[in-house]
Image: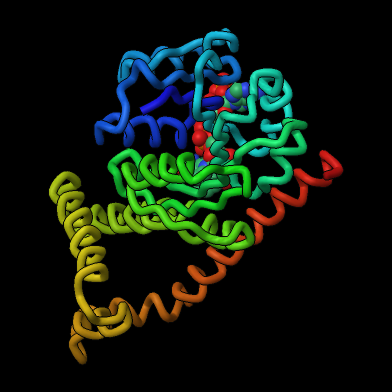
Length: 276
Ligand SMILES: NC(=O)C1=CN([C@@H]2O[C@H](COP(=O)(O)OP(=O)(O)OC[C@H]3O[C@@H](n4cnc5c(N)ncnc54)[C@H](OP(=O)(O)O)[C@@H]3O)[C@@H](O)[C@H]2O)C=CC1
Ligand SMILES: O=C(O)[C@@H]1CCC=N1
């Protein structure tokens, strides 16, 4: 594996670094990380993953093959401005930014670059990301192989059209947060119904893993799997009735649509601010 530079050292960068290292794709010596100013965070990454950390862009970009852009969309203009002198045609740029298009990044860099726009999620940490990838026509077959390898190491990787990435962001980029939200509610309920916290947590986790595995392995659709749990006049029916009264299913649909719209909005706002 080659040398990888991370510009941005937040949650998503750490999830990818952790996933790549734990799954033996690359060792810490070949991963270089920088951020805006949070030195403490860089120290933590160095201590935990043995990556190289630096604010010296010369060292960061020396013989670098792959550059991850992993800052918030609002910070990308400033970040790319700072590094653009070091970006070379033979480098592969992988952006994980929500909403920001490949063209926008190229405009900021003022250089024709091989760019991958990816939408992973933080489950990359445990090798379970659902990552969608779009590329521009300067990405070579060899670079694409490398990209597939990186994202397959941290989970499932699928190529999509760039115009589908906002929807992927709303569905699976943000998706882990929806599941954690449900887990939080289950944890709170466990307390109220008198179950000890540690024990309840184990039951909740196993229930989520079990249901996810059933969705994956069973030939049945999610609706049928739900019906299989729901005995007439039983406990599940009573519980689900309350969810229906609160229109929870529609709320989830609205949530994913809103997150998708926000991804589009981030891109539009970015374009407006850059006038691209
Ligand atoms: N979190 C998630 O679940 C996912 C996030 N994404 C995308 O990943 C990107 C990062 O998100 P996330 O990791 O959550 O964000 P964080 O806020 O956790 O991290 C952002 C990082 O960017 C750094 N940064 C900001 N400005 C600059 C700069 N000018 N130069 C170098 N580094 C800079 C910050 O440094 P400092 O701390 O020093 O300010 C920080 O390390 C976003 O664009 C998001 O859309 C995509 C999929 C999932
Ligand atoms: O909330 C966000 O904007 C980022 C993108 C997907 C997940 N987190």
